[in-house]
Length: 264
Image (cartoon, rainbow, N blue to C red; front, side, top):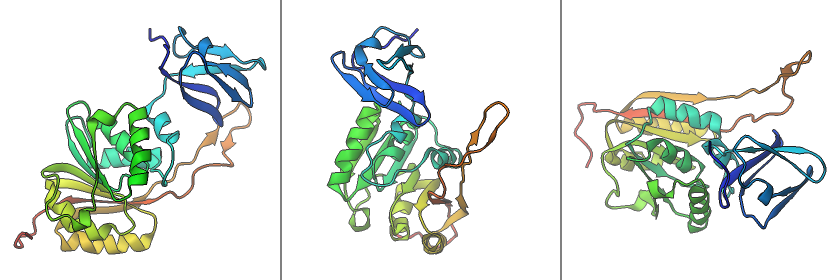
């Protein structure tokens, strides 16, 4: 039985649109539409229990998952949504112990997710050119308890003379011009290592695919993933009126050798 303590993270859950991720502090209260939630009321209770607000509403005390930390991240940039995260992990075969390179840290949502899979023996090396965004990302990654599995560096991979990582199992690119770093990514990946790029537009996919072929990548796949939620209620189950639409296109490929002279 896991009981909530001071400094524990709790997801206060009222319904799907009213939920709050908080670090418990015995002297604090959370003021919401459903009433005041006293942190002290949660201390000593088991995750899954419920407490009552001053407006006589029940709120459940749920243990946060990586999904919760990702969706409640502070956003300096657009995050990668769970529907895309799951496919990336499955398609690239991400597993514990792997070495992963991320180019474009953003808000750290994807970094957090990948670190949660490769830990405790694996590691994520993430690079970005915007110190302001990296500060936000570091807070998000630390909040989720993943920072010790992540190395963050303010570095422009496009201009790097020496690659900071070699023999990586996977590289993920979240840039507006991902094709410009494919030669560098190739140098950092092991043979058959995977690269995944996040592309908001199809024009980016076209340019990226050309660069992947030129740099000897195979098993190229481009896809879009749509999640449609259902409002399931007795006698009136239907598709939800609201939901996340287009978020991104994903490009996947693997490093191969085309019997050309290896680029230096």
